[in-house]
Length: 120
Image (cartoon, rainbow, N blue to C red):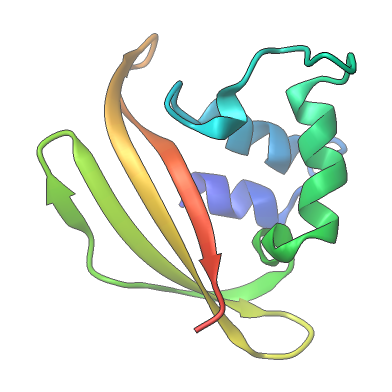
């Protein structure tokens, strides 16, 4: 929930803070957790700041209501479907999250392995 709230308030307390939080809570298994610098020299944060607002993932920034579906857990893996209501159209969009429990400096922490937008 903290990641979704940060994304909703992306530019608070500073520009693209929400996207930064998203990246920080992704696991090493996630495609977002690639090297800090890519071959073109742009950082992961810079790439996501350019990509998310102009893609289907913009729903993570532009929602005004949320509904959680039942959490499915299997050992150190979890699957969560969340429905977000688009602020502009009132349409509901489902986001499918896959999480894994990992050891971090915070202790055992649930991190994002993947998140996919499903329009229905």
